[in-house]
Amino acid sequence: MPIGIVVNVCSVLGGGLLGGLSGNRIPERLRQSLPTVFGFAAIAMGILKIVDTQNLTVVILSLILGSVIGELLRLEHRLERLSLWVIHKVGGSSDHAEGVELVVMAMVAFCVSGTGIFGALQEGFTGDASILLSKSVLDFSTALIFASLVGFSIALVSIPQLVMLTLVYLGAGLISPLMNPYVLGNFMAVGGVVTLMIGTQMSKMAHIKAANAIPALAIVILLSLWIV
Image (cartoon, rainbow, N blue to C red; front, side, top):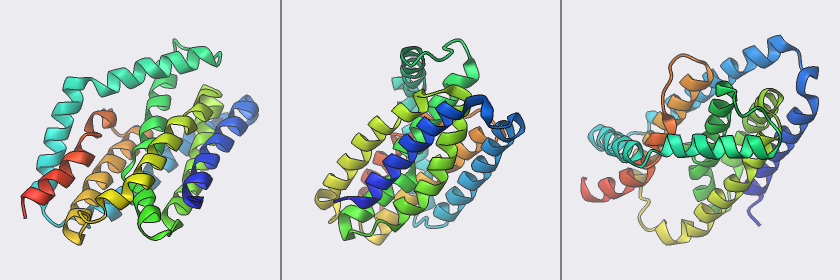
């Protein structure tokens, strides 16, 4: 039983439902200020993972190639369209640009963040769920505040999150021979940069299309195996 994945998914689902129910009951000053705090928490997590870099050239090249692929595939745009559809289905305001941006950030942060994927890998490798359990605390708070702004659409993000983390967990046994310290360090560094990008979005320090960098998480493994 992947306890970490179950708890992490339930934290997003519970936070999304509670935030959707509470809505305006949460003071406006908290709903506006807490996302900035969460953003800086994500930035701190990202920086901690970036220092695991084993080969800076591989990390930078992976981010460039991944971002190019993401731009060509228009991943951010596709997630925005999916977010509009989700918001519309749950009766939210689909014409609110900030709402769409929050749902896209939630999808990236909850489903494909470097910490989440590594946590699922670690649980698949060793059964240690500590990373996902720690991540669940931040995810619950983030989902709660985001849902108070956007509505129940945040709770639905738990569905692709469950699928993604479960696939990574099940695939851990297949890729475990590849994940030596060198590959793992570079992977964590790229995941840290993606998490850092998400943090800057949450804290409104910059408008970055973090979703377009997602392919870099796969590319860094391939390049690390090739460039030693």
